[in-house]
Image (cartoon, rainbow, N blue to C red):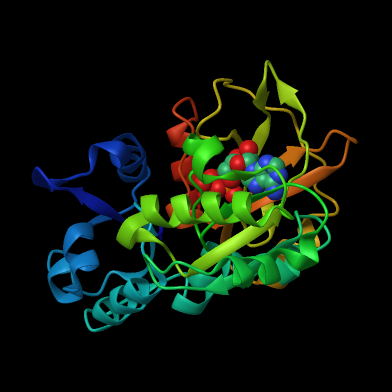
Amino acid sequence: MPTPVLYCRDPLSPRRVDEHFAREAQEVRARGGAVGLVDHDALLKGDAEQAVAHVPAGLGSVWYRGWMIPGDRYVALAEALSRRGTALLVTPDQYRAAHELPGWYEMFVDITPASVWRPTRPGEILAAEDLADLAEPLLPGSGIVKDYVKSRKHEWEQACFIPDLADWAGLTRVVQRFVELQEEFLAGGIVLRSFETFSKLESVAAEVRVWWLDSEPRLFTPHPDSPFERGLVPDLDHIRPGVQSLGCRFVTTDVALRSDGVWRVVEVGDGQVSDLHPSSNRGEFAALLVGL
Ligand SMILES: Nc1ncnc2c1ncn2[C@@H]1O[C@H](COP(=O)(O)OP(=O)(O)O)[C@@H](O)[C@H]1O
Ligand SMILES: [Mg+2]
């Protein structure tokens, strides 16, 4: 039986799949996969029952595909679905492990930039001394700041890149700006990472997204922000054990070639909420989801 998939509904046209995922959902249907609709807005507002009100009862085991969901909201989604006889193929613990850096870091520690973190609430400003303590294990060098899930890479100078982690004033300024701009969406806490120099194609980091299903690399796509439709083919032998020990069924790893020729894992993600590059073949992806 093709595996059913739950997509986010279109907020303006609630009987349809959100436009961003519509092509993919169409390909799932074309392969016999049932498609259910989840109300992402209701889920984030705290009404999980409403979010799944239009999911057909007794769908069995399903994938979710859509916008990112905070870890606690994913728990609520799983519970509301189970009351309707539907189970997510990725459990809440697995989702969190792949989605948040502290969940996957240990498994990839030798092949990802060194990182430290501290849980914080949205808007919470850490004192300069606390940030300096946090950064201490990464010294000397430059770094980047992000939360457990996302960076503000498009505001690189003011809210992402830290030229010198030993410079308290600079470190505090960039982290504070990051916290301000994340507003209430700051996920989990503050992460600081050692900066590594990655190879660039025409001045853009050549990141490749590898999609792993049951610890097998099944698809390679350019990073969603990449201006290139084809990426390099990464060397995965040293990455596979990390994916295996993470133990999640559907995972992405964003890998980049460091300037010394070593493939590094920049980020791990849950495959259900990782974005596809606009050029990626939705049919091939849908076939993976429905299991044909
Ligand atoms: N430790 C690092 N060293 C160098 N560049 C980095 C590092 N971490 C992130 N970057 C760059 O910043 C971008 C965004 O970081 P990432 O961790 O992928 O956050 P996001 O979730 O916002 O995509 C990456 O695609 C990479 O180009
Ligand atoms: Mg990324």
